[in-house]
Length: 481
Image (cartoon, rainbow, N blue to C red; front, side):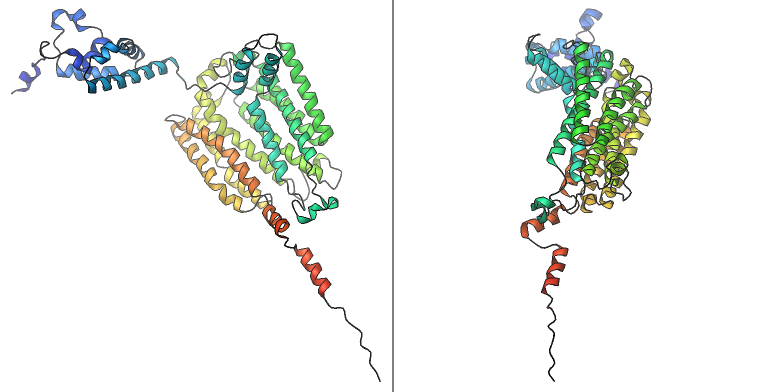
């Protein structure tokens, strides 16, 4: 049989039902009825045209996908097919629905942030209820971000190398460790209030841009759950109470750092987002201040001189190196965390007029994320070198640091595509708490002192004292003549 004669073979409509062939069924519904366009010649279809119709049905075009969804959504059309064809039709229908929904959202959407979720919950209460007002004020503080800020201050406070901490001699009130739970309480409360004030001022300034973005358009000020006067009062009250708590309960240096964080976040970072991509670096500096606050709070408890900012942050004996290394960890972490996050909603940032590297320069956006992912390994080694953690921390933190670097390399190679942005984002979410927990679990000398306090093994100084006591005293001999 020649190729020309084979091409002329057609399928007669009286021998086969068109509904049995999925390609013919989709072709009739995507491109329109052949019978209506070409008259009586339409019932005949070649095998080649049937295979071409499958390709046209699978093309990611929004009109074709919407047509397939609209036509095949009825149970009669699907149930009329043979079982294996019915399964194929259902798979094609689901794929078409996904393509249709994806065409409506050109960029990856993220769930609402905590502030928007709290605002939505508060909106369900009556307008004059106290729960509505308190819920809206709580959403002004950005609770998840505030929790992260507080934890980043508490961990350096706990890791500050205090002499005789957890030792057996600490049971003596006169030799008790210098870290005070009351100081930690004031540090936690003051940091929380300062963060809440800065976030509330940020929402006051960005009300118009929040309304243009899907993640933030449900925030309380956008939905008018609170008046501007109430938001200003909340921000001012938190700022005064927060800095006052830090000043009276911790020390003036920590209070100054808390006030500086409010000023930088609300006065520099927030307005700079409309002007330059350098806003991300300013935001990273703000993220590095809370670890310094925690370190300075602990250093103030064991200060031996005047306790000024020079002694707490720039000690001559090098004891302040650990605080700056922790600040470096939080500074560097902002980039592998925020760069993939902003890439997913880059079009929304662009439409809102906020200058982010994700849409201004995507290639540089991925390079910056990779560059700062590489510094965590030397930072962790540095914490061991300055005596904050044991050297085992450099080994145990290596796998999670390597995981972050690997995801950053993928993000750099694909510039956010092929799921690389999502991979790096979730790697950064897990990276920071894992590193912090590992550091806490391997604080310098902690387990040795715990062992001595439980087992009762004497310290080296006690051993020397015992040896001195056991030395026999010389007895003078009397010589008789």
